Length: 134
Image (cartoon, rainbow, N blue to C red; front, side, top):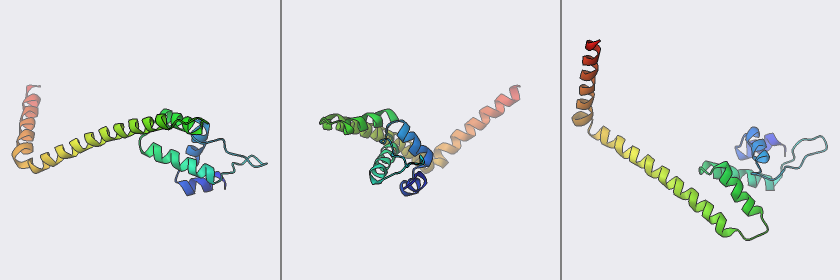
């Protein structure tokens, strides 16, 4: 299949597929006699994997390293798992930060009348005093 068809199948833009190839995130794609990329199921699987790992927040550098380990003829399972664990830790920290922000917003909404309203009234008064001093 050509790059447009691969893009439609994977949900990855043609530009991103070319970028993945340039950055070594997917193997070099074979070309037809007229120079068009010929993408097979092996490449589709690699594109999909790269997309999933990027969606999981993995940096290009770590993804490249993971793929190098995978493509190596050596058993790099431990290093691959370390990269995945590192990424999971980063994502869990982001999740915790997001959850804390959500909890804070819930608190603000639940206490709008007794907390937010008075805080906003105080801020408005400070702004009014500031404007009057000009």
